[in-house]
Length: 208
Image (cartoon, rainbow, N blue to C red; front, side, top):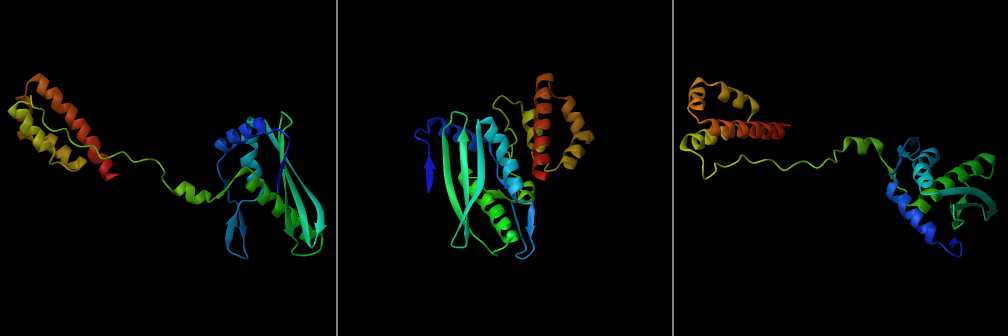
């Protein structure tokens, strides 16, 4: 159950700001028994602390009583205004010895803090390998404008037949094409040069 101070307006605004600045906690530890990875308490705290401090928030976590073989872990989120939010998690002990208690406390603190802050674990390797950069839509070669001269329209059509950078290089170096280029007016030559640059950028993106 969650408990709060009498007023929470400043607290909730600060939580909203902090959550907007947080990214997931990196899975930096391995569980050999299950051959899986997980976000350690250190990773969770390192991820949360900068965003919390920027939003004037802090947290405390403390163990409580043992109840029916489970230890209480209380997490409290506090704002500098004095407003607060608190919840308690009961974590069963795997073993009734100091090691079992310590493991339960660490486990409980980790999951309680993540749940309180809405902080998910993320696969850092997977995130790094996944290219989330939106790819630009393939550019289209500019069609000949209505005002193109016949010579420029013919050369532009030939330009669009070159599907690779190498084909474009061969096309531009062709002696026959050079003669055609020289026959263009200065304005048509500038237009063709601009179209050539845009088309070369296009085929390079397609090949990437």
